[in-house]
Image 1 (tube, rainbow, N blue to C red):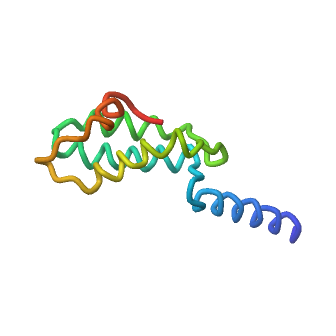
Image 2 (cartoon, rainbow, N blue to C red):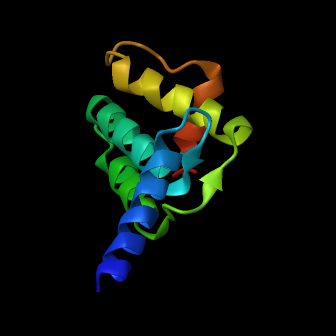
Length: 104
């Protein structure tokens, strides 16, 4: 019993460590970041469908699968921009492609 809880604790700890290491993004973490950003932007656009679609897309994402930094960084930067932007600001061109569909 103690061994089981130890291995679960170790697995959880490693998973959290991987999610927190710069340059390592779990698929689920990146998806949750994007969904939060889309929901934040949706309030400005009055497009709650985009928020719902992004959120639903994250249900089946994995905490174990790691997305490469090269693939994750542009989406993460776009999501962070959306979270900080006011409604009057237009997304940068790099973000516009991501805005069309749920990510990652």
